[in-house]
Structure formats: structure tokens, C-alpha cells
Length: 220
Ligand code: GLN
Image (tube, protein in one colour):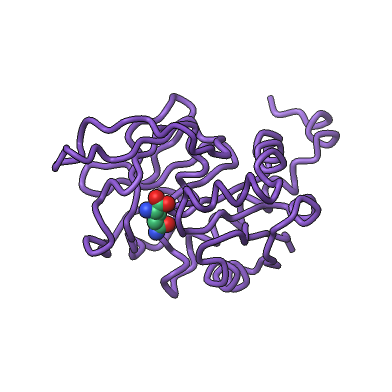
């Protein structure tokens, strides 16, 4: 059974722990580098991304997180967690009502990175513009999932290595690059844990990738 951590500096940690447990993982909160070293995969929850990244720096977690993500540890970010996995972030332009163009790079907000994408924070609007919508997610069987969007970001653009696995209203809201998964919305806030099950499968798949074994297998 894979052991999956939930980064527990800020945000909706408890909901992810419950969702992971119901998707047949052993789930535990992760606050310290020693705890990070013991998990097979990590969820970065929803919350407030600037606070979360400041706390990650303060707790000495930013570099260990970057190192493990770079080494291929499976990671799943929801909403603020998606922002933390972005190689680049934009704020909505305060003067742009459509929020479809403009914006400026946020200086000083550090991210873990790992997904070659530009994410626009609060792109879908303010807290009171939060909404729910049915979203089809590639790789999640059984029809659409209920997407809960709370002051949600969207993905403005992705690099060639990134798979877009869901869109809403013409905007990218879920992506996957290798072992990294990110959604603008919050599956942990619904009783439907199929997206978490997809992530648990990603973690299991890495567990099976014993390099020694792979090199002995002929695939031609
Ligand atoms: N708007 C938040 C941020 O920028 C994310 C909101 C969320 O995680 N629900 O961090």
C-alpha cells in the first residue's frame, strides 16, 4: 500500500487525508523534511498559495520539495497546490475585467515547480464567484467529476511535455506531466475520490518501476 503525504503547512489537509484513505492509500500529514523523506507521493492541498510558499520556505521545506519532485516523486496539487507546482505564475491583471490577457509575473512568490506551465492565480474570479461544474478528466473513468472551483486558478499555457487532461469554458483546469498531476478544482471536497484514485495509481506505478528490473526486460 503506497504511503502518501499531504503537505500540512496550510490549507485543506484533512479533506485530502480522508480522500486518499478512501482511495486505498496510507495517508499522513507532512510538515518536515524527515516526514517528506518517508512518503512515496505527496499531495499539495488547496489553500492560499502565497502563504503556503512562504511557510514552505520558513519550514525549510522548499528545497526538499523541489529535490523530490525533480527526482520523480509523484505529486498532486489542487488549486493553491497547482499554483505551487507551476514553473511560472501570473496574477490576474487588476485592470483587466476579462482576465483573459494582461497580468504580470509575481515577483517573490516562490514555487516548487515541476510542471512546465504558466498558471494564473484567481483567474476565475473572486471568492464569491466560486462555482461548481461537471468536468471530464482524461484518465478518470466513469464520466465527469464534479469540479469545485474556489477562487481558482487556470493554466494559461503549457509546454510540450504537459498533457492537458481537462478544460472548462475553454480554459485548462487539469494537467499531467510525468508523475505530476494538478487540478484547478478540489476533488477532495466531494465524496467522489476518482481523481485521488488516479493519483494513487500513479504512485503505485512508480513503486513498480524498479530500474534493475526494467533494464532486464526486452520490450521489442
Ligand atoms: N486563490 C488561492 C491562491 O491563489 C487558491 C484558492 C484555493 O486553493 N482554493 O492561492
